[in-house]
Image 1 (cartoon, rainbow over the protein chains, first blue to last red):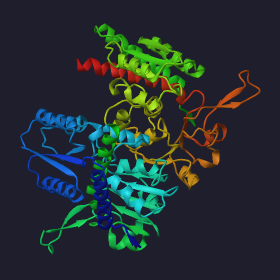
Image 2: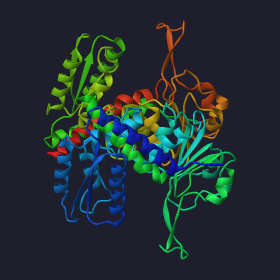
Image 3: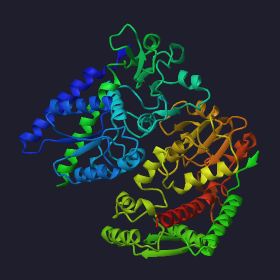
Image 4: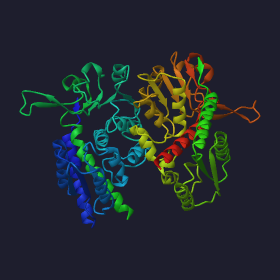
Length: 294
Length: 294
C-alpha cells in the first residue's frame, strides 16, 4: 500500500508554480494576481481565505482581499464583482462561500466572468468540463486529477466508482474520469443516496473516489484487493481526547481499507491540501491566458 | 414487451403544444418563434431544417429560415447570430450543423445567447444541466427523458448503462439519469470505446441507453431479462432490396433484444421522432420565459 501524499505533492506543485512566476517576472511579465471577496464573519471562511492569501504569497502571486460586512446587499456584492471582472490587475477571483442568507449564491456565481472564475463554479466552466473543452475545473476535482496524474495511476478502461453526486466534487469527478484523456477513459459509475447494489458496484471498482460526506462510510469489506481509494471527505467527529474536542475523519475507515489498497489518500494530509494548490494552478492558467490574448 | 412509440408520443406532444399556443394567442400573447440558420447546401441538413420549419407550422409557431451561401465567412455568420440574439421577435434559434470547414463550430455555438439556445449546445446550458439548474437540454436527451416520463418507466435506484459518451447524447444522458429528479436518481455507468467489462455492465443493467453509433451492436445475449432499452442509433446500412439502397438500423439488434425487454424503442419510429418535438418544447419554454421576464 502506498500513500497518495497530498502534503508532499502540494509542496512540490507550489515550488513549480513559484519557479514559473520567477520566469514570468524575468521575462518582464506581470505577477499573477488572485482576489478574494469575503462577506461577513464566518470563522471557517476567514480561515480558508487567509490560507489562500498565504499560499499566494508563498508562490509569489499578488493577492487582494476584499472584506465586506455581513449586511452587504446583493446589489453591492454584484457591484464589487463587476469591478473585479473589469480590473485589469486581477487575473482571477473567488467569492468565498457560503454567503449570508439574503444573498442568492447562484446569482453571484453567474455574475463572475467565466474567464476569471478560478473556482470553476460558473455554469459555463462546468459545461466546458462536460464537453471536454478547456475551462476552469473546480479546486477539489482538479486536485484529485493532479494527484492521480503525478502518481501515474492507470485509469484507462478501469472501473471507477464515484461515491456522491455533489456539484462541486462527485458530478465533475465522474465527468473527468470518463472523458477522453489521462487521467480519464475510465468506466465511471456514479453512486448516491438512491443507489441500489451499492456494495456490488464498490466491490467491482478498481478506483473509488469517496465524496459522500459520511465519516468512515467505506469499510474494509466494501473494497476489492488492490483498489485505489481517494478520500475526499473531511468531517469533524467529537473526540474528548483531543484539545480541540474533535478529530478529522474522512469518508473511508482508513485502518480497515488501507491494507487492501494499492494506493490510498489519507485524511488529513490527502486531497484537502491539494485544493488550495489547485486554485493557484487555475490562477496561473488565468494569468497565462490573459497574457496570451494580448 | 412494450414499444416505446416515438411516433405516437411526438404526435401527442405536438397536439399539446398546439393547444398551448392557442391559449397564448387567446390571452393576447405572441406566438413562439423559432429561427434557423442554414449555411451551404448539405442535402441532409436541408432536409432536417425543412422538417423543423414544417413542425413549427404544425403547432402554430412562427418560424424564420435564414439560408446563407456556402462561402459565408465566420464573421458574417457571427453578425447574423448577433442579429437573432437581439431580435425581439425571435424566441429561440438554431444554427444547423455541420458547418462548412472554414467556420469554427465551437465559436459559433458559444456566440448564441444561452437564453435563445434551444439546441442546448452552449457550454452554459450544458453546465446548467450538470449542476441541476434549469436551462435548455439538447433535443435527443430531452426527447429520451420525455419518453421515459410518459411511459412511467421506474428509474430511481435502477442500474442504468449509457453506451457512448458523445457530447450531444451519451454525456448529457448520463447526467440526466443520475440527477435528483424523475426520470433520474438512477445509478449510471457510462460505457465507451475504452471500457473493459462492457458485457458485465450491460448484463447488470435495468435500463440501457444505446448511443454508440454502431449498427446492431447490442445483441440479445448482452441484455438481461426485463430490461428497458432505448435505441438512439440511426445508421444507414446498404440494402439492395430497398429502392433507396439502404435500411435504417439502430444500435440494437432488435429481433434478438426485443423479446427480452420490458420496454424497447424501435428504429425508425423511436427516439429520432422525439428530437424535433424536443426542439419545439424548448422553443415554447424560451418563449414562455421571455414573456414572464417582461
